[in-house]
Length: 380
Image (cartoon, rainbow, N blue to C red; front, side):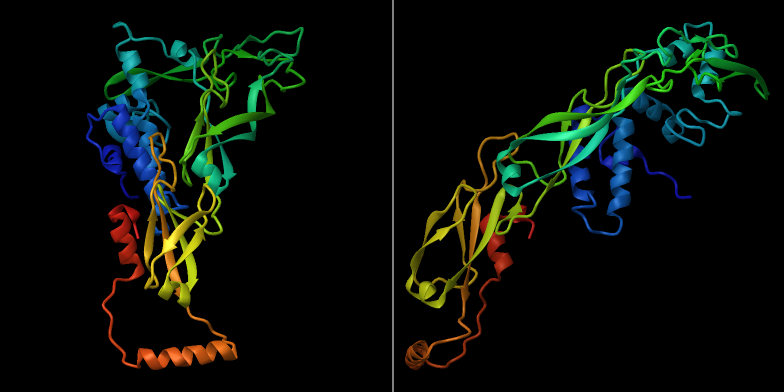
């Protein structure tokens, strides 16, 4: 099996990087390798690797364990803290060896407040909604404290009882012999699953699980300038925490529907318009569709196919910044495929004045023109 890469290397940051720098690096890479955006063969694996690295390094406790012990400190065949020392991890080893030096109890740590899990939902929005922002309502299924038993898991009128196997500690301990001497292996009680108590008469509504899954309608505010694949966080709207811990977050992943006319490049909008030969040769004033409605654009005489016109400030509002991008109008000169007798006669007269000489052209292509208009940030 291939060895895991260093998480700091995966995110391209130094080991002493701050939380804000870590987040910026993650967002940049996640957007770059999101499978919906990046079609390369390894994009999905890179995306998973980036998320795994950020999940560990963004958590203060996991990052500390990773910095001290590497990958073995945060994951392994036996889960977090696995080291291969006879089935117990670093936490067990240091707790039992240094129990007389102020080490806290694992039972108290386990029963302390725990943050709830995060949830994720997908939301489709239109091109215009992504540009200018909107308010949306979403449906989400999440677990909430059972109202019948008030979270005890026991049928009203009854109470949970102390677990007879662990005597209410939530742990079972076994002495193991090793080359270093005798060690105590602490594991979660299999009967009460670490709760320290068991429910003899389960609640008829939650069946002893203490929570029930319920549908909720939530409002989410989409800020102006969002793009496909971005996430909006609703703090505290995820799964409930345990033992008084805070609830997790709800992440709304945005999917922007393509527009009939417009294409987006960062904060700029591209649109192609067709004009006829007469408009290109003689010039004209045309109506151009924009996100704000139609605007007038003057086409100068002698305009060539592929000419790019810039409408400043008519693009996408910049996310969390002031100002907007531009709209680039690309005109294409169309050649008629069917002519009336009168039109054919006029073109024949025109051709006599234009001559038949063919001159090779070294004019820039459309992508080069766009690059000149927008710079390298256009990405075309």
